[in-house]
Amino acid sequence: HLSVCPNSMSGPKTAGADAGSVVSDPQHSQKLLRVLQSLRQEDCFQDAVLVLEGEQIPVQKNILAAASPYI
Image (cartoon, rainbow, N blue to C red; front, side, top):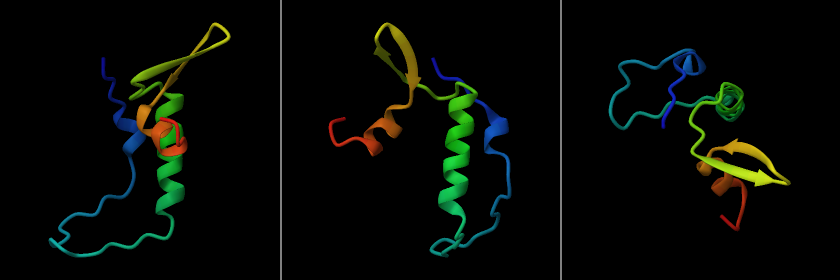
């Protein structure tokens, strides 16, 4: 099951960039974290469930893998 939440991805878009061009955005990491937080809050793109003391917590495997050396 895959849910898509298009509102989470709104924002400025770069159109017409040439192949091989470099776009620099010093705010990229903060924007990325905000979008990921928004996706989590909207229950979008969760593809796994952690169970802790009987509580089910929907998660994104890519975030777990990036944050943990054990996954």
